Amino acid sequence: MNVLILSAGTRNKIVQFFKKELGDRGRVIATDCSNLAPAVYEADAFYLVPRITAPDYLDVILNICQKEKITGVFSLIDPELSLLAKEREKFLAVGTMPIISDYDLVETCFDKYRMYELLRKMQIPTGKCYLDKETFYQAVEEGRISYPVFVKPVRGSASLHINKVGSRREIEVLYGLHEDLMIQEFMDGQEYGADVYIDMISGKCTSVFVKKKIKMRAGETDKSVSVRDEGLFELIRDFVETCGFRGMIDIDLFEIGGRYYISEVNPRFGGGYPHAYACGVNMPAAVLRNLDGQTNEVKIGAYAENVSMMKYNEIAIRDMNGVEIVP
Image (tube, rainbow, N blue to C red; front, side):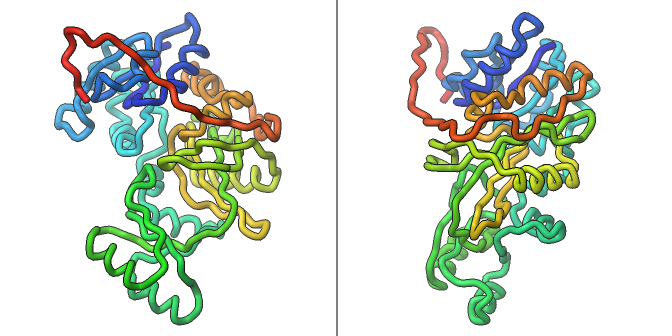
């Protein structure tokens, strides 16, 4: 059984986890468009590939799947997830299972306004959103929302181009600089993150790990502490099973006045997943069981509370003598 991790980048821990869980049963292969991506050197083999926008990118990845006899493939970056989901049949044709939810659901996750509409339809609490700034201004006048608010891209990741604004003038400036923006209610509450696994065979949510976010850096959780809340577990399980998610997903939430609000959903490993793994929430093992044709046992909330994660910087040193450096 061989696993392919696309766009591995700096996610060394994910590569390490899969190598540990596979043991001598198979190999972990990694790709990236740069040979200065430290995670790729943790893998059993590394392929330097074109950027995902290159016309031959999909063919290159499919050829790797065939050559390495890849059983399952997943990506660690948002822009690649839609490609995996859309081209699912091409991967299956070469014997490789894409570990991703279906295409329409992935697209909904990346379109923040579509996700807002889905959450409202499901009657799940979420922050108010507006595509049209004039409609937002009217809502302000009517007292249905107030400043500050977030102005962000409808489609985006890594917290890029997200601005907290406190006036109409600031909104006008941002809408003049960028296209495809939306206005989102500022949720003034405690932020949480949930690492969730939905069995690819049964469709049941088999694990949920919730962490209270203490500090963020570049859109990722830098410091956090594990928490358990049966009501939140139930909310998350009902949401992901009703939507039809598969594999690993990452959910951002806020708690305001004792009520949980879903903010965003990312259909991939979250940047804070190592916290869950260290607490015994073993998603790589769940992935491998599914790839082996086995369903996973439901173990929602099977971890200890008050276990903290504290990220810190590390460096990788590698002799690149004789190798062209691709940044």
